[in-house]
Structures are given as C-alpha cells and as structure tokens.
Length: 178
Image (tube, rainbow, N blue to C red; front, top):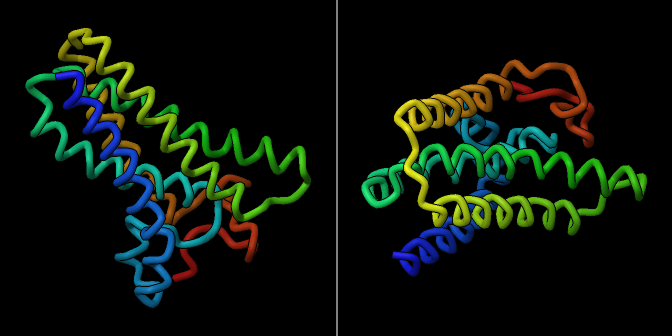
C-alpha cells in the first residue's frame, strides 16, 4: 500500500507540474475566452500562479477520492492541509526572493511553482502515511475548504481585490481584462 501511495504522490506531482504549466498559456491560446479564465491564469499575478497549482490538484483529488478514498479515509483532510501549505509557499517564496533581489527572474518563478508542487505532495504523502483516521467532520471540512478555494479562485479572477497579490506586475491590471 505504501508503494501505491508513492506512485500516486509522484503522479500527482508530475500531473500538477505538467497541467499547471499548460494552464499558464490556455487563456491566451483561447483568445482570452472567459471560460478558459475559470481554470487557467488570466495574467501574471501571484494569485493566478497559485491557481495554476490549485486547479490540477483539485481535479486530481476528485479522481483520488474515488480510487484511494477507501484505503485513505482521511484523504480530503490531508489534501486540504497540503494544498494550503503549497498555496502558501508560492507567495512566501516569490516575495522572499524578489524582496531580496529587488526584481524577479523567470527561471526562479518557475522554480517557485515546482517547489510549491513538490512541497504540497511531500506533505500530502507524509500525512497520508501517518494513517490517522479522520473524523467525519474533518473530511466534510476538507471538502468544504477545497470547494471554497475553487470558488475563490474563480471569483477573484473576475472580481479581484485591488491588492498586490492580485496585481499583474507586467500590466499593472487586476484580474481578467474581459
């Protein structure tokens, strides 16, 4: 069972990295279609880069609940904690390194995404291997938080707060331009 879990965590890391990278370009490829903006980055803001991590993990979680849910009844709670940690890593690492350097570097931005991806799945695997049975309220809370985050990512794409996390450093705009 440990080997199976390792496979799923590695597959999750690779899937998230690949799909998140593709989602970086989907909005432009679609001609800035608002429907594509629901799940892909609409600009270069830190928030939209966090969405690139979240959306593939959210989709993967739907599949994993069906496949692994019986063996890991605490999956939703563990995934929620891992997602929150991975999402927090993106602004922490990005603003730390840009604060030190005074500017951003594209390869470092990419590294931040993959480090957050790796951190998310490393924590997820560790929490799942601990094997603690989650109480029902934790699973319901985990499900509610994941769906709440999905709602926030969609909502804030089209109605972003005007604070630095949502500001596109390239254009100075917030959210979708359409």
